[in-house]
Image (cartoon, rainbow, N blue to C red; front, side, top):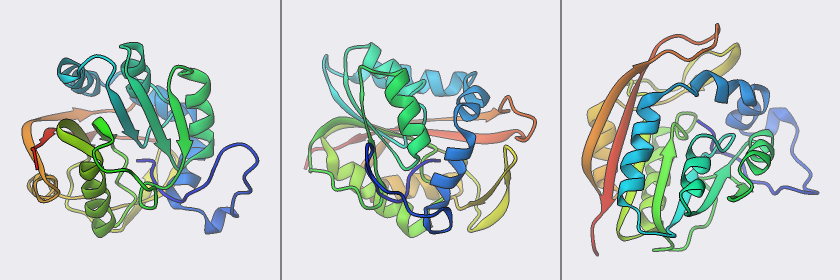
Length: 226
């Protein structure tokens, strides 16, 4: 779910909590608890295996909404790929930088982050869109697609529910979620210029008393040649 207001690591001055993106506030609060809760997701690891099977050696990969860096950036960097992880949460970026020193991490808003066209061999966004509006999600997926080289691979994962601006509690923290039903999420990916090669559905129960079972959808995609 990470992915909103911009900033930089190091000596940057961050806005007050009430002016920061909700995703930043949420994931700063969750920290490593988020990683622990989702560490047992076999569907996520299977999705990473799908991506690894299609990457040329030394590929450049964007992990959009990288969280703590595990398992995505760690798996990709460990296989010898050049990984750039981006997240809105300073806490997550700090954890990822320490846990996956072979990758590069940047504190940034996916909605505002400039990305050069055709600059990555693969992009992945695991549950990094859910606190954006539908228009923002569509714009970000289109941006990620443009950043892919023709023929490059993309993985998008979400909670496929037809909800918009629904407020609730996630792992003990207040959250507002917007998502698409599965068919609409597929249509959004296709509209951005991605061909969906396969999709996987799973029901996952995070290992946390404040989280309940949730459906997961993984789209495995390719950007066609221009």
